[in-house]
Length: 151
Image (cartoon, rainbow, N blue to C red; front, side, top):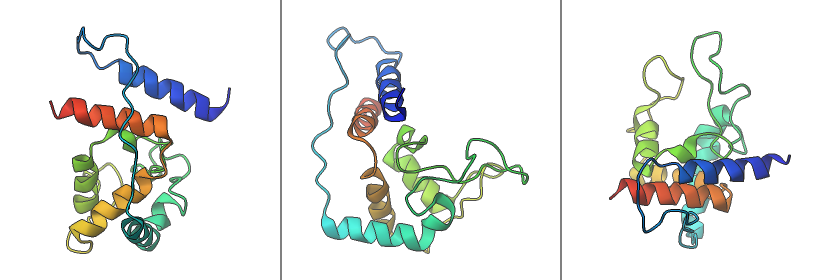
């Protein structure tokens, strides 16, 4: 089966299994997020920040390091993909921003802390840039999760 079909099916399965009972939405598909309208300047900034600071570890197309799900010989996890094929979409904007600012939790990965090196504008732009790479069904599931978690 095509990998993109598997990812889409997995997204809908996970999004539908939120553990909450809500009779008004039971059995309905995940709502589509509003159309993504990115500011061209913000995306350009995000790509520049990404290529300058992130591509070395996360790959030039945000594909992540090979074997990113297994700890390396150093005991740490390699850089995960950010293009929608990894788990970044499971995290809120707040968690993604915090990871960029503060780096990997001790003993987990090699992500350096970028606080004081990247501005908040640059952090936001880089997140929007890699989210722009996510397939629409994945983005929809992420958006639905964000909305649910804010309630």
